Length: 561
Image (cartoon, helix red, strand yellow):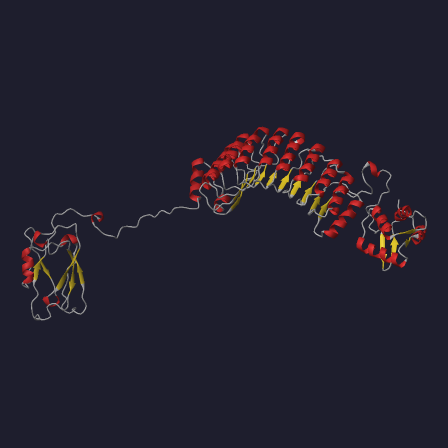
């Protein structure tokens, strides 16, 4: 209990004196009357014992402050005047009683003594000063949820996943995830809104893990790029993925290569290609689709106008399956890129692809490498792309095209005015010098044109090339050398060709015949420079070129063998 002391010399600075709530009693009617008559004594309550206590003099008389206390009982006489108030402290009022004589004596008052009341606890007080409580924060990243799930499943949390859980791209290729680990990841990513690209290649999550990922994507449509290559999903996994694709509207690209899908799984994919209106890129390479699967997928490709890219490489489509896929390409109006490499198309499949390219007006890139295509297929494809002004990239490497097939393709690209071809890939296809010469002409028209090919042969490798004089591929000397206004012939085979054009045996030919003879030589040369020199020489010689001087050179040089 805090008792105010003498405050006679402290009138200038008011002080507050606090009484405990349990020790302050309510005023009675007699006390209120005594207060109005400026009495100095307070009547003690009947149930309390008396005890003298010092209080301040009237000069610095304490002023009673009332505060709300709804929980305390008040007397009936004070109900109207002091309703909802409780005396809690004394405040020194320096102005009160200033006219009182300083010599007035201090009086003793009797304050109540504590009786046997029950001991109050902190919970009995009405106060805002509550004890600090433990604050729980909601983890929006999903890390705590992932750790909790791993604990439930008895898994070791993957630290890489925890660190990158809020990234927009997560790549976990060949992390050795089990189906259960994939399920834990799927449960956490179900509510993730930051992830856009997820790569889980090579983890062998199998059908169980594929189903967990599929269920996650049925609810999460923020992921746009999913790669599940080499995960052994099998037929059950294929069904789960297809069910998800039927309802998911967020995915734009999915990689399902190397998952052991078979022909019977193709029917699920057909339903997906018909229903999904959002998927743009589908990779089904390195699976086990055969002729039957090719026939099913071919019809789906023809009916789909949403896909931009499809990859069916490294399957076993072959024959009927290859023809069906080619017919699908022929009917498709939206496909931009397709990869059909290493499927064993054969000559029949190659000719079907040629027919498709003749009518398809949307395809920009096609890869038919490693399909056992022959020169016949190459020549038919060459005729098709002559009128195709959309195709940009043609890949036909690792086929049996022969040098004749390679030359046919190069000639079409060089002679067609409408073609927009930017790249011709003939990797590992043997070529000869005529092919190289044509490619040089193409690059003069299209400096950015790209071409790749196999070994350069001395001569062609077809039956028509039998007996044809070969050219040493190691020789780098140009067949025609222009020195200012003179022409030097380095390849004496040119003279034999010129003699065929000299019908009257005068050793004179026109500049056009001279250029045609050089073209027949089928060797690379600087065409603009030689052409300019030939026509200038013809002008100096009355419009015709005398090649007798070149025969004199032949007497001093050995002909090419």
